[in-house]
Length: 85
Image (cartoon, rainbow, N blue to C red; front, side, top):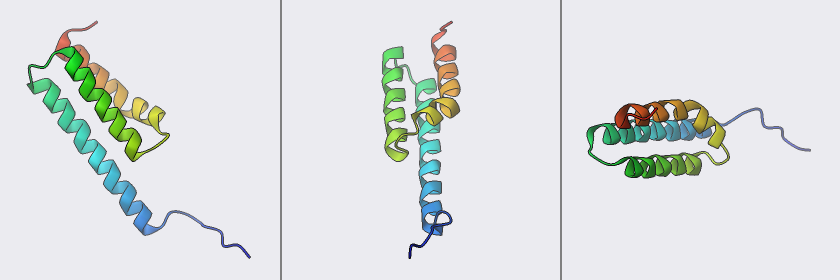
């Protein structure tokens, strides 16, 4: 006899929420850091790569989701900060 699992446990939901909040905070922090600092574009790209790596450690296999949700925002940040076209 097998027991079917109907959905995530309350603990799993709490952990997922914690990870999402942490990622949002890091996206906001990284964005502010890039905007307010005098770093060059290469250093900014390194920070964004580290942010993406963090997201993939928190949510393995979800790179497309990160790119879809945060990609446009982060791309716009680089365009505005460094006058890219």
